[in-house]
Structure formats: structure tokens, C-alpha cells
Image (cartoon, rainbow, N blue to C red; front, top):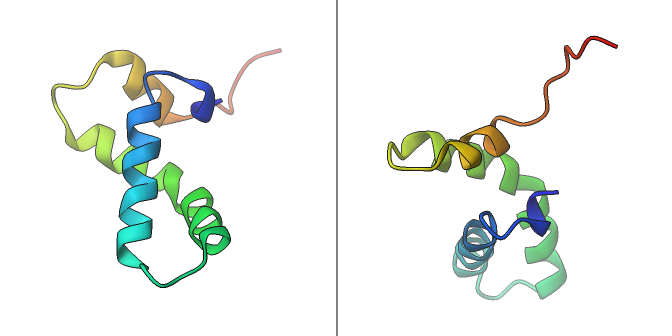
Length: 70
């Protein structure tokens, strides 16, 4: 879901770049796996550290609610 959101795309690209910069000699597949594994926590930390972020991004970063009444 997050990867398909235009609001989140700049964060996805930024995080991929950070992972790539931290590991410049590592293969692209490894970088992608590392990105996929660490993006959600990084995204949440990044969004909640920025007071100027839109509420939509805060809700996306907060993740799905597990206590939905059915």
C-alpha cells in the first residue's frame, strides 16, 4: 500500500538512496531487501519526527489498526 502512494514515494526513494549510500559496494538485490526490511520503521520514525507533515502521512506511518470491531 505504501509503495503505491504518491505521498509516500519521496520517502521510499529517499530511504532507498540512504540504504544504497550506506552500502555502496553491495548488490542491488541486497539493497532492495534491506530497504524492504527496514523501510516501515524508518518511515514511521521520520514522519513522527517532523511536525510539519500532513495528517495523511501520519496515519499511513501509524499503520493498520488491529482492534477493528467486526
